[in-house]
Length: 143
Image (cartoon, rainbow, N blue to C red):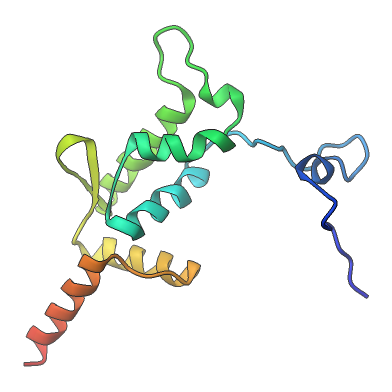
């Protein structure tokens, strides 16, 4: 016997209201670093560099309205969270800050390990420059 929680007629509102008046899932959950990282990695695996604006633009259609609002002169919560997430990745030696606001995938062992882990998790492909660098390193070690 299979219990099916979601069928073709369900939408996000139906999923949220499955337990009667108790809202189980938010249709647009509040943003945090854990929700930002997948968007960062999707761009990094494609081209090895990302800008804050690119991540904000890709998350905005899915973000909670309160995360998009900026109060007076303050930065919107979404922008602040994306910036903090990228800065955290810089501190972990996964990214380095490049020119023109680019956050670039570092060529460090930690960045390589993390990129390989993310790539294998999503069954994706490493960025081309990392594949070339790994091939060059392998050739130098074995020739």
